Length: 458
Image 1 (cartoon, rainbow, N blue to C red):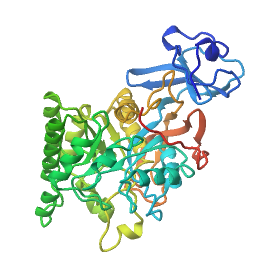
Image 2 (cartoon, rainbow, N blue to C red; image 1 turned 30 degrees about the horizontal axis):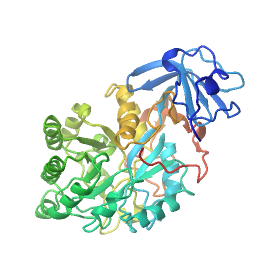
Image 3 (spheres, rainbow, N blue to C red; image 1 turned 90 degrees about the vertical axis):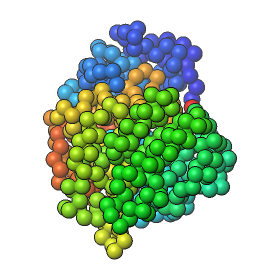
Image 4 (cartoon, rainbow, N blue to C red; image 1 turned 45 degrees about the horizontal axis):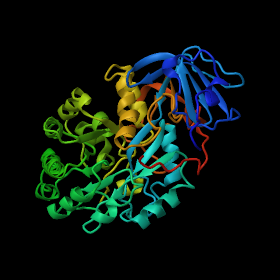
């Protein structure tokens, strides 16, 4: 689908009263004809990283073509959004859909259905499946597996191993590289400095090199005391920053859970290192105080931190580039076993938790839009994702601030549980659009398997 040559060929026939600031000048990606489906979201409180304002949103086919008050379009389907907030579809840059190799826990169909139910329209899946994504062949195979299953758009990261630095760097369709400095689910631990340096030297500087930031030697040293204490994360992040500085690479630190990590990242940024970071939803909404009630359900890597540490993350939320779910499902039987694996589901509860926090004043709605959509799309170079603006995909979440959500009442994830079961939240997801089409409406996923598309960096 190629770009239109002029504004008039795709917009003028559809709308009147479009202000110059919102026109799609030279960026339209819709077909030049005007026979594509037209939808007009009317009267929404549109949230962008820059503010919240009442606007209409005009959609043609898969694309947003105008955002402005008072739009009209002959023949367009009108969606009344008065009293609703319109947020950009979440770009969840950290999920584990367990496919291929562990589909008894989750697969691309159930994982993407859970994503849409939580307002997530694009996911980036991690490479640490039982059949790890560590070669061009494995990458292509995973895309082929996911494409007919996924109900939402998806991208993939390539995994780092001791011998694949040059091969991983050559996989141009990967959104980034994932390097596990500490052990976690799967077999991709890469703890030795030589192998880590090879990847930092080889990976393209314009793409993020994402780390699981726990130092394996420290993890083993402290195994008899506090499980994976903060020093494990601090040591790993400090080393990764040094490697990023030496090789002039873009470092992305996954699931930051301590203020010490934020201190190290802030210092690195002040010294010119390109370092971005994310916080996982569970490190904001759960703490060590929840472990007694949750038992093995609360086991995750990195682990839950003290309430004081959690409050410190909230106080420094402006230092994070994104929030990700780190959706890592396991079955209840596995979590209740003698050796429970680490990880919790979260892709369908992340936005509801954050929206409730925004309504309570813990963060602003513009900041929410940046952390969950605009920033992850920009960091991973995902074209046309992450904003409600002309020229972007019509990935939109409509939420009712007067509604209520009870987490765990209904779940789409195959694992069938959530650590937040029973929490009552303000706000309710009413409708989710994926590239202009309904994907989730009034509690039901209506997008079909295969309607999601593979997305790769620009």
